[in-house]
Length: 130
Image (tube, rainbow, N blue to C red; front, side, top):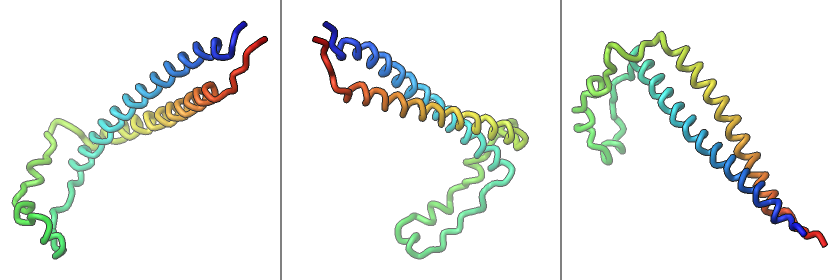
C-alpha cells in the first residue's frame, strides 16, 4: 500500500528546491539591477548634476542643522571620476536594466507558481489505497 504522502514527499522536495533556486536567482537579479541603477544615476548626475540645496522652510530649520548642511561641499563629495560613467553608456545601461527587469518578472511569476504548487501539495487531501 502506498499513501499519497509517500509520493508527495519527493514532489515537495523537488518543488522546495526549485523555489529555493528561484529565490536565490531573484536575489542576484535584484543586486545587479541595483548596481545598474546606481551607475545610471551616476552617469546622469555627471551630465546634469543636482541643483544646490536651499533649505528655507522654517519647520525644517527647527529639526535640521541647516548650517552644517550648507557647509557640506556636496559637488566635491559626489564628484564622479572623469574616466567613469559617460552619458553615452546610458542606452546600454537602461537596456540591460530593462532586460533584467523582464527576467525578474518571469522569475517572480515562476516563484509564485511554484509556491502555489507547494501549497496545493501540502493541502491536498491524503488518500490511502486499501
